[in-house]
Amino acid sequence: MIKNKRTFFYNFKEELKSHPLSMFAVILLISIIAFAFIYSLTVDMDALYKINPRGRNMPPMTDGYLLGTDKGGKDIFKLLVVGVRNSIMIALSVTTLSSLIGINLGVMAGYFGGKVDNITMRAVDFISLLPSFIFQIILIITIKNYTPAKFVLILVLFNWIGYVRMIRASTLGEGQKEYIMASKVLGTPNYKIIYKQLIPNLVPLISLRIILGLASSLTIETGLTYLGFGLPANTPSIGQLISSSREISTMQNYPWLWMPAVFVLLVMMLCINATGQTVNRALMAKQKA
Figure 1 (spheres, rainbow, N blue to C red):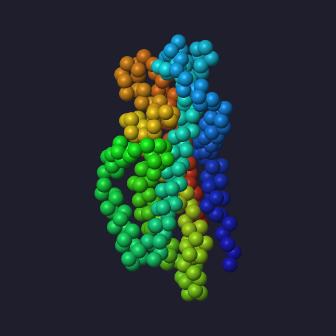
Figure 2 (figure 1 turned 60 degrees about the vertical axis):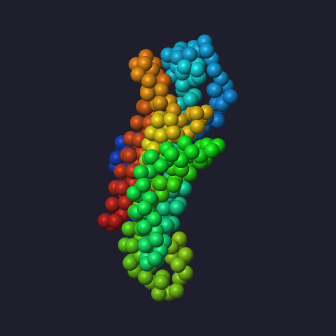
Figure 3 (figure 1 turned 180 degrees about the vertical axis):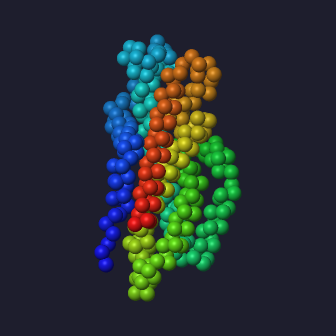
């Protein structure tokens, strides 16, 4: 039997070739992330936070400030770059932890079924009924010694359930295929079936869910920080820069304080969406092959 060489990754590459806009989006997203992480290494964080009363609210392209300064005289461009890096790190951390929890629980529930499935899905149903946004705000307010790490854990607490539902449904279908049934008949240990056969065949679907989860985590972090319930005040992020627009006078008179962050967030979300659509097309092409 000749194996089909049109793998998911092959289809993904072909989709990028046939859709130049998608390729541009993927390259642009990678470039933004790479620039944010690399340039941040050159930023003197102590100097960045120093208050400069004489340089308050300077417009872009003034005295060497590419995007101007804020009300404390801090460089908007450097704050934006560091903020993008921090927001991406938070989103990646939340997505990674949520996917690890959700994928494992979803596979276990779909593979073993019975009590394991019932207990897992009842827990998912219970958490789904909770107003997650309100609970996140309550936890952020009540937790002592609040840090970015604790913020990540609070977001993960409600974020893993989406992975469970999707992976469980896919596992139920994948578990009925011949290669899984043959492995069970041959007495292959369950952990080998799950981690060496089942999960590798779910990689395309997992990739799509992770990309969508990244966009979701980025949006939640930005929203909470904008409202004042996100990252600590001394941690720059996209949400903190956009929060300047909460004051009408600032929005009208000092647009450079918040518009660059809005623009970067919009571009990143469009790029992530385009990447997700490309992954979805590649996944559909593999299923048809």
